[in-house]
Image (tube, rainbow, N blue to C red; front, side, top):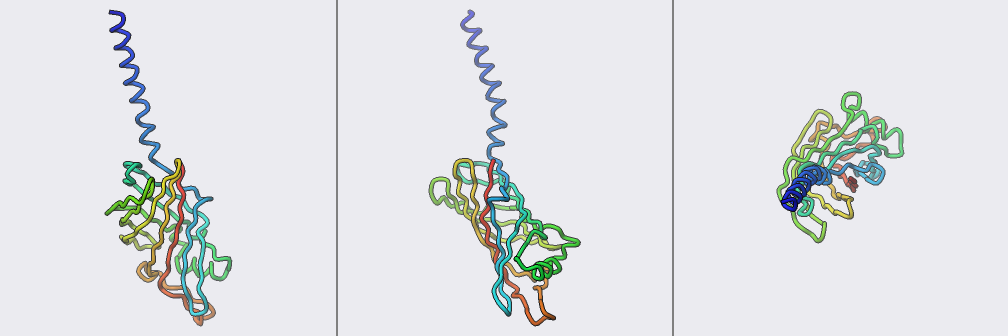
Length: 196
């Protein structure tokens, strides 16, 4: 009789322990962007020479429905616009003016839909998706592909996307009284690191 009671008590304790652990298992699938280890660069052209700028201040989050299969639930990303740095103050000033940083402080991306997940190896996936990119006052749904690699609790997200500034009501910056003009297309290249 005592043996049965002990066994029942152990089952109840095990069940309670499992219920306490389960929320932690779900939380373990959420990762935050590591700004120091991550990089985002914007590459463009001009009538004078090619150029690029670096985003120094980024934050974001990635959440998996199932990390084993690469199934994503959320992926959000934010860049502080005035952290975009080219190494040239005059170019940075023109960039901030074009992006109207007085009114719009950030550029954001929010994953909307995962269309396909292609397994590329252990912990490696190609994600074909669409998400909302917001620049200044314009929010557009854009298709985007990126690679994910999962290594010992670290998520590495790699990809690039070419967009037109004018699609977001951004007039390509000019310099020297308009004698130097910037190309409309820019390519965003990112290597984003997420940690628990």
